[in-house]
Length: 156
Image (spheres, rainbow, N blue to C red):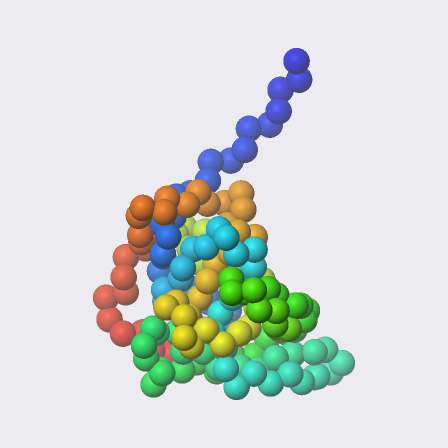
């Protein structure tokens, strides 16, 4: 019998975690871990699509803190793609897609994020199963396993 290579052990995360998006200048943001969602999404507003030197980009603003619209971060990234995403309520929406680094626990790696209005949602960032696959096991009964809550307000 041929032996299969053993997978690397995955880290453990709860249903919500404090993470960072260093490429976007976000040192801390509370994320909902959602294995029911394929893609990851971030609350973005004032989204502008443009071309620079023949490369498509998006410029947008983030509110990284829940229930705080006063703190905003201006971001700009190359555009990876535009996709139609079906939300949990069945609505289909065309969204811009970017790639940025996610820092969760001791790991930092690139993930795809769709840009959408999550103003009415409880979390400004949703991490879907594509960003979790092979790296994390989710314990839905626990929270904040990878990082403690930031000690003070984070500003850029």
